[in-house]
Length: 132
Image 1 (spheres, helix red, strand yellow):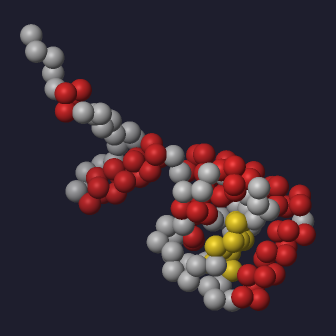
Image 2: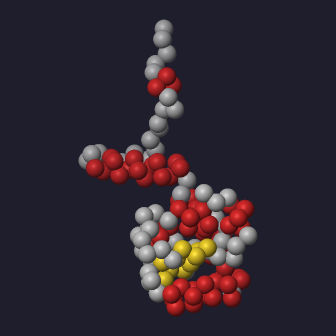
Image 3: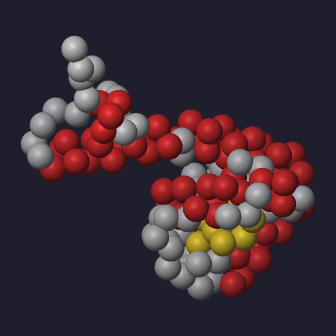
């Protein structure tokens, strides 16, 4: 994982992946800078086109270059994309939010109604009732 101070030194994060399971670097970078990425795999979930970054067709080098130029040439737009990316990362990609989403998936697989929050004990000792 690259520290946020390094992302903050950049003008844009470019993720020209042809295959991407999730896109963690795009989420990490979005907290500081706009993202230009291939419209593939997990990047479709982590980058909101026109809001937190720009998506281009995978393997299209010309489209990738144009998108980078657009972000670098328009500082105001770059700042707006970066700000929106930071807000989205802070609200959509927290560990609590990810745990809630995962718990919801499991609940739906089990055919149970989803709960708004699942409490997971830190240890078995914490979950055990106190001895009397």
